[in-house]
Length: 189
Image (tube, rainbow, N blue to C red; front, top):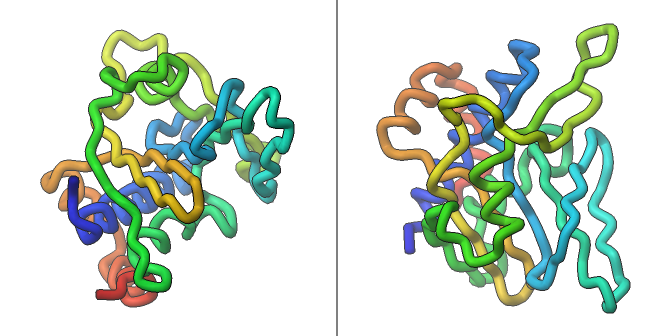
């Protein structure tokens, strides 16, 4: 288990990391998140910019699973808001998991072997994400993830765990006023 504050700081680090990749127009993004219903099954569907979740109600196949990079509204604030504001006194459970030990092979594979590939249109605007296998010798994928569960919503969310030094490096590399504004808006004791 980790504290809600540490989970919030990791969510903030993820927002900063994603913003830096997207603002620089890079092709690959390792710092995505995964959200699924408690009984989700394959395949993953990458949520595209301006798309919204459309859970599959077909019980014989279970729920579809979504991988997403929280860049566009409302998903860019979904995780940080969930960590920063306990709704109605109900706080889900935050725990650190080792991705290569996840019991579900298909989730383990996404968390350890895949990255989010970004595509840009002719004007340089981000227009598509897709999961792709990491074929590099030195992977940048995260080995530890935060798993958030909330019984009321029946949701499970995975997002990268950042060590204290990684968080500090990301916070120091970003506009300090912007970081303070995000904290002021989303963090509640």
